[in-house]
Length: 278
Image (cartoon, rainbow, N blue to C red):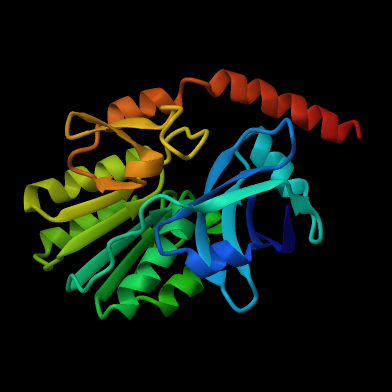
């Protein structure tokens, strides 16, 4: 059992939680994640560890309500407990002094790229961060990202704040101006990561993406999280979650992510009806 120590709404449908997990807090590194299960009949879902406090024995997660389980998680309050919490899982990000690193986060992906950005800055990199959302009211962690970046560029799809357009377009402008970039870390919706990878490909800039494949056991045994990278089958939970963006088959990933959309929609709507009816 893992107790919820703190819960905060940080944007529309987006929550931040501090969860009691002493062992995970001591061991986790940037880029790793946990898999949680809320109850005996619940599904297992992966969520990135955004931060940790080893002294307090807690980890921080950020999630968006997109389906049945995240909706249930959002209804829990401080002091309540999560049944299972497994981690840290996945391979840590390779942190070293690359030179000029660009960290890109879209939507909730900003929470995922935050610990990577922080670790890169602490390793002596010059960090440019580009974060984006559909509109200003959906933007998260702007102040936190600014504090760990040498430069922060904010984008919104509708132009309600910052640069009008996508994070990939903001990156393209930097590249077109001849700015030297040594590596890129891009995390967010699959179309966004694909666009960023295609943007950097002509320049030969190493580009890392963190994949959000469907995941069940987190050990590589179930095969649900398989992805195609460099025309080879990889398992996101044990081979990733980060891969070379220039080698990922994003179209296949998007196809696999859509496999259970209808079932998830029905489950979510059923859960919402139950909540409304008490």
